[in-house]
Figure 1 (tube, rainbow, N blue to C red):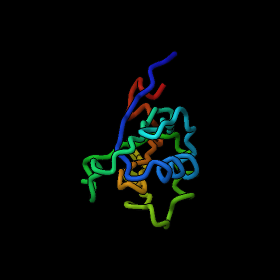
Figure 2: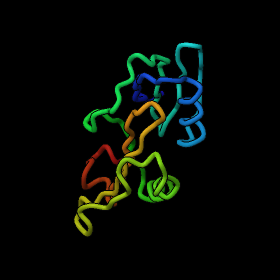
Figure 3: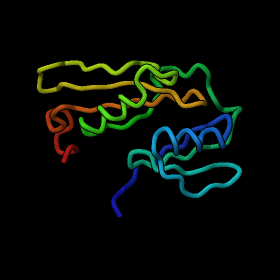
Figure 4: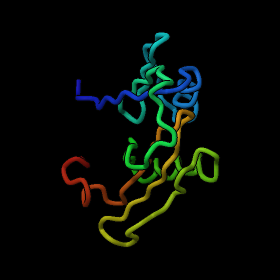
Length: 132
C-alpha cells in the first residue's frame, strides 16, 4: 500500500458533510459512526469529525486543504462548481504561458472548511519528482 495523506476536520452536521463530500466532490465514503465518517477525497483520507463546537466561522483563508489534479480533471471539477454558491474564489489561471502556469479555485463545504482545487499545466515544472 502506498502512503495516503490523512486529514481530520470538524463538521457541524455529519449527515450534511457526508452528503456534500459524497455527492458534490465524488468522495467514496468509508467507515462511519455517530462521531465521524471517513471520506476518500481525491486520493486522501478526510475524516469528518462530528464536532460542531470546533467549527470556525469564518475560516481564515490560510487554513484550507485541497488537491492538485491533472489539468483536464481540474477543468471538469471547476466547471461543475463555477458560479455556484460554494465558490469562494472563482477559477483562475495564473502565470499563463509560463512554465509554472496554474489553475485554481476555492470552494467551501457546508461547515465552512475551505477546499482549494488546483492544477499545473506542466506539473513537473512546479512539483519536480512529486509529479511522477
